[in-house]
Length: 554
Image (cartoon, rainbow, N blue to C red; front, side, top):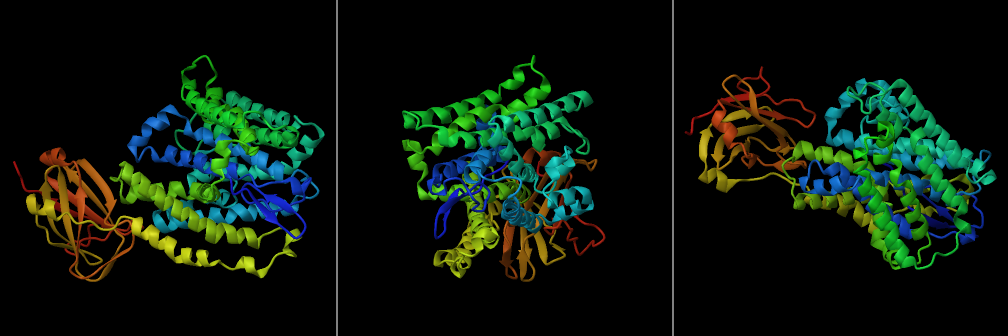
């Protein structure tokens, strides 16, 4: 699910050339003075990226399920792949096999720092993922951005699973010099070449009778070959290359505003139609797999790109609004971070699933993406310019502006303020029925004072026995007389590191558990650090959790 990077113009003392999708360096282009910054496409990228966020967030925010059921939001990936081919061709039309080294180096250094930053974020927020290091072949593939080239789920979904598309894009970048060389000789050569590649992986899937999905994660699947693998997706990239090669020949289109509305409507229609394709049982299941999730919308995406690249209608004018362009610029970081933050949200506050929670999550994601864009993407883009432009660089561009210096402090502070902290449920505790008074101290200085049943919920009251930094997770279970789990919840005491002074209280709620409580005989409580290591009760240090016999309330 690839997110393109900013489309912008970099000026030098003599001319301007386009710095395009995922940070291409200024290279020699035909008629560079005629190149313009395509801000409307940059802004569109944010909306496409946001659809990917919604696609992944639907499981944690159920109110999004209806939208995801009626539109194949993952088809936005096809838009990104076509856009990538178009912009790179538009910016680097003279690129070939003999002058591609600076392009490849700068392209690698443009995406790799964010790739590593996302991995660092994952390990900081979810340190238990360090266990994946044991699978060193998949980890090595991830670190070299080749994990999507292996059609095995344990590889292409390793670590930060949406990054499979960055791996696929990396393959595209390496193939661009060859495809552009072919395309300049014969316009349809890139499409022909990549269509043969797609036909090969389709034939290979059918010949091996691969399952559409991997049931174990360690086997080759048609999903891995036809949806993930770059050989299957290369035809979408080639379509963008073909558009780029013909772009200068396309005359201004009539009725630009109407065409902008129609092109977007057409793309949305194909996304809706993609959800209906699986009902066509007469079609081959492998083709349905590819069409319904991958390439069905490629042509409509190409039409959107051509119409909005001319920037003559009212919609494209609105999309050039600077805040929207900035959102488009941070969309690559947003893509790389969103799934990690969703996983962190699920592990810390899984019960926040309303609209307010979603927009708070979105605000945190945008702020984190802006921070990554400003303090990782932009500096590395400047640091690894092509040698051709280093002569014209000035020391000023290495320095942060006043607004960026303010943002270096303000953005993390805003993220911290928006992230939920500890909770107190004083009303529920005062009006509820006490079901246990364990007065148990866990290692680390956290004591459990009481457990109370209030309406449909159980509330646990904790106390800090000494000054501590709260960042712990609590796992609770209700067990029946046989010791079987009939209710389970794992959530964090706070989703952000928070200081708790000695004697301060903080509460933990188990919602909608009254029916399970009527059948329960025991309450199991396990307090853990963020790495999953248990903090055992001091009274029974040989056990990782506290078992409480519940009082009958009926």
